[in-house]
Image 1 (cartoon, one colour):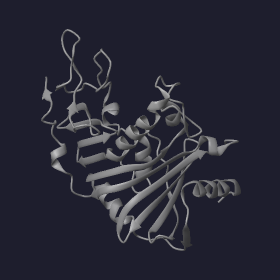
Image 2 (cartoon, one colour; image 1 turned 90 degrees about the vertical axis):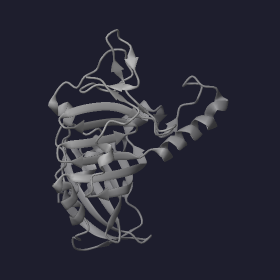
Image 3 (cartoon, one colour; image 1 turned 60 degrees about the horizontal axis):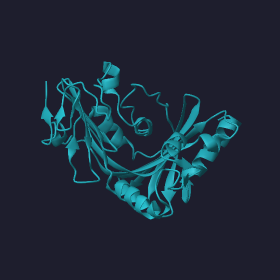
Length: 284
């Protein structure tokens, strides 16, 4: 390994991986999950427990990890704690989902849902943080948005114009590109609109709190990517991912860091996700 690349690996490892004891030799913990993904029929449900990406921080009103003041966002100062409590509640209730069964697919990320079933694509929103209601966004003949309707090929959106999927690649694209990059350490499930790293095994070992782990790293789009897979026995329970620009003079300013915890990861595609929710009426 080149000295600079080795130094980058060390830095990125320090960003996301702590409290470990290294050991030699590749383990087979990941093989079970590689088989699941390669067969193309599975259910994955996961929670994001750490999501730190510079562009996302900026979009969320975060600078160097610090919130803008409520007054800068148009709120009163006394609303600070309420806003923090509401955001914390939303994070705790959020459950992202990916279910695949051949060409049929359901994805849900932050409430944004896309269902591909029998060659048709439906887009809608799940208010998981309220009463769990599903919302459509069908634009009728006179420009009115019908929140209780969906139409094949229409994209969910908050605008007043009809949005449609432009091409097959956009339809097939999985909503969370960072999640796809993480899964690529196990098996590349999608190459649509995402440049995936070609990961190589690095090392394995055990953490101080009783988990075993396997480390993988790869390079794509001028970025170094590292993934750690955490196991409890034979079960994959958590994945940590980090990346940064290889040639950046300040790599810490360009890093991405994501940690997810799995609630479900098996080879049984849950069929209830392959139908439009009862809250919504299909308009053709």
